[in-house]
Every structure is written in structure tokens, then in C-alpha cells.
Length: 317
Ligand SMILES: Cc1cc2nc3c(=O)[nH]c(=O)nc-3n(C[C@H](O)[C@H](O)[C@H](O)COP(=O)(O)OP(=O)(O)OC[C@H]3O[C@@H](n4cnc5c(N)ncnc54)[C@H](O)[C@@H]3O)c2cc1C
Image 1 (cartoon, rainbow, N blue to C red):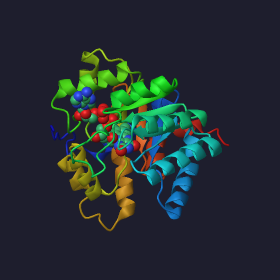
Image 2 (image 1 turned 90 degrees about the horizontal axis):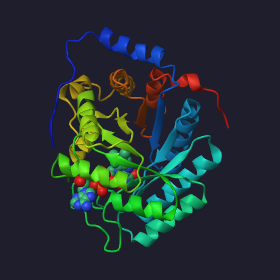
Image 3 (image 1 turned 180 degrees about the vertical axis):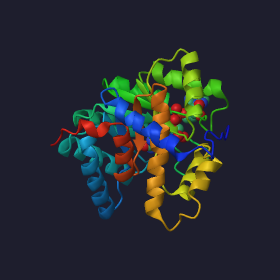
Image 4 (image 1 turned 120 degrees about the horizontal axis):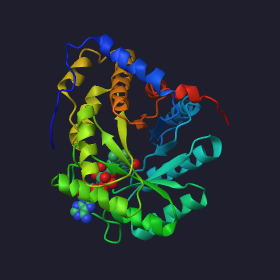
């Protein structure tokens, strides 16, 4: 794992941030900008109600696509499937199903993919997945399974002509020995048929630029879509980041100090910081953004508005 890089002058005036964001909003006009929203399948009835209420609020932003994450284990799989199919049936979204290689033989994964195709789902986010024992544990491929995401991409393309998105890691995947291994892996996934890479979340635009340079230097030519984590719980964020090999800058953590009992301000701060990050990315040509919504509409909606997506509001079902 690499770098922890202060990207922001802590003494910079707040006005500078606000100006950048509003410039994006007024400039973009939303025509050339697209967003995608990521959700996770809810576990309880109450969580399901929250998800569908968030979906209703986010639908007017007309995202390019939405995706639903996938965990190993029968019930989680079933929840992903149900959520994706309901989105396809009841919303104007184009849903993409995440699918992993974890704990299943190829035949089982192929059957799930075939079911998606038969249900009209044409886009899969193809991943290796994390060990069932938890992130950071040693990954053990299933003896009859797909070993890596690149193999899964090839398997999916054998089943049907899915649109396939894959992951990318601007701060290195924790199991990659070096940048060469990382970029070679991305190339394998592209060679197998992936047409978009969505990044792990990050906090400094410099991290994204450096990664994009590595991708371009390797001659890889697919959109690298930045993934933006809209997590206002900074303690949870730190835990997850350290497991995923993502550096959360000290200045970012410091901004949340003293806000444990103040969720509203944490939400506002997260929306503001992620809007600022999108503004910086926009300034240097990024036009596609993937928002990790955590099944909530408020922060994702605010960031989407800064990107001008509210001007697309001409929906509905
Ligand atoms: C956008 C996004 C969405 C995600 N969604 C989910 C989800 O829904 N469910 C879930 O469980 N997890 C999800 N994850 C997490 C992901 O499953 C983990 O990060 C996992 O550890 C790696 O998956 P991958 O697809 O990136 O793996 P891969 O691309 O297969 O790479 C995994 C590691 O293996 C190495 N490697 C690959 N091929 C070889 C080879 N032939 N020889 C040696 N080493 C190799 C790579 O360099 C890398 O270090 C997501 C991550 C991202 C960025």
C-alpha cells in the first residue's frame, strides 16, 4: 500500500471550494456527464423500505445505470437477484448485477448469469470477491471455480454478450505485488471483454490522475470511472479503508472530529467534500462518476445535483 497525500491546503478559503463546485454545476449542463449509483441488497424489511424510498428519490437523476452488490452465500445471492430484477421491473433504471467468483463452481456462477440474461439483465459487474472469512484473510478459490475476475469476465462472455464492468484500484489492490501486476490484471480483464473499470474509492484527485496515467501508459483504452464513497461515518470509513488499502487523509478525518453525535452535519460535510472531489475531477475532464450510495438518497442526490444531473429530470415510470 502506498501514499497518504495531503491534497488540500487546510488554510484554503471555503469560498474556493464553493466556487469550484458551482462552476461545475453551471458549466456541465449535464449533457456530457453521467452518473451511476451503487446499492447493496437489503437484509431486513425495514432496510428494504429505506432502499426503495432512496430509489424513488434518485430515479429522477436518470443515472446511466445502477448496480447492486453481491455477497457469497445463498441468501445474499438471492437478495441481489431479487433487488436487480425488481429494479428492472418497477423502475426506469438500467440495473447491473455484481457477480463474484467466491465459493461457487463455475457451473453455478454460469447458471446465475444465464438467469440474469433470461430476465433481461445485460450488464454485469464482474469481480473475484473477497474471502468469505472477511477482507484481509487469504483468498482461496473454489476448486472448480473461476480463480480471478478476468476468468469470470471470459466465462460471462461465453454465456452471452453481456456488457461487463470490472474493478480497478488507484492505490493498488492489497494483494497486488506491484503496479505492473495491477495493470497487467486490468489488461487481462479488458482483453477478456470488460468495457468499463470502476475504481475503488479514494480521496485525492492526484491518486486518480496518477492511476489514469498508468492505465494510459499501458495503452489501455476503456473508461476508468471514479468510485466515490459517500460514507458519513468516518470511523466505519477508516476501518473499511484500512482493510481495502485506501488512504484516508488526516485532514479528512480531522474535519469530522467532534461530530459523532451530529449525523446531519456529517452528512452535509460528506456531500460537500465529495462534491468538491467531483468538481476537481470534472475540471480535468472526468465525465462519468460512480456513487457508492450506501442505499441513501440525500448525499448521492446532492452530489448528482452539483454535477447538473437534476436538469435531466423528465422521468417517470
Ligand atoms: C467497483 C467495485 C465493486 C465491488 N463490488 C463487490 C461486490 O459486489 N461483492 C464483493 O464481494 N466484493 C466487491 N468488491 C470488492 C472486490 O471483490 C475485492 O476488492 C476483491 O478483493 C478483488 O476483486 P477483483 O474483482 O478486483 O479481483 P481481481 O481483479 O481478480 O484481482 C484480485 C487480486 O488478484 C490478483 N490477480 C489477478 N489475476 C491474477 C493471476 N492470474 N495471478 C496472480 N494474481 C492475480 C490481482 O492483481 C489482485 O491483487 C468491489 C470492488 C470494487 C472496486
